[in-house]
Length: 286
Image (cartoon, rainbow, N blue to C red):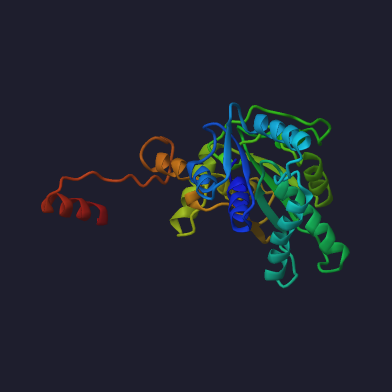
């Protein structure tokens, strides 16, 4: 979806190593594609979606002895565990009640579960936060599996504005199931409208995030409304990518291309005349 490729391309450039990136043609955010290209990675645009590209990557790496650096790589998940340790350290090892995170390829979900298990086994924490994995309605195979108590692994043809979690067959499925079961976690889904409205709220306070990140905020709100998360409970909501990673959705939301946006901040067109500009400013400031 672009985040991994951007990071890998940057580190490969610093180490003077050749980097090869597979992306689904026309289906990743331009901010992420720009990073991979700028850092010098050789980029293959595969006809199909993320899951098609993933299948090809696995074949190519097996047959051509190329080192695989997506979330199938266990060392990557070991690194992602550090997010949880930083959260726990920030809470002085008195853990929050919930950790809510976006769920696409499920690498973070799996890594977070492993980190919490290890922290508990080492005696660093005396209780385990519950994980809440949030998926987009149009890319919700993990949610569908959760509804059946993970008796069957579901796959979907993913479609959502949240490009970083637009995945229909997540590779870390089994590890994520273990994480959810061990933490007594849950899976929820949110609509694209809920995601974009939540993103607008995050953006408005000066933080800024890409659409996929806002799934955690939208999911938290939904779980509070349903009474799953209680008013007295402590919640950490994870933002996984900044606003400039995926600017296309933001522009669409604020320029009338997203008709149901509650918090759209439409730009105003004015004549290049002093009086026209002054009138526009006065109207805005009323």
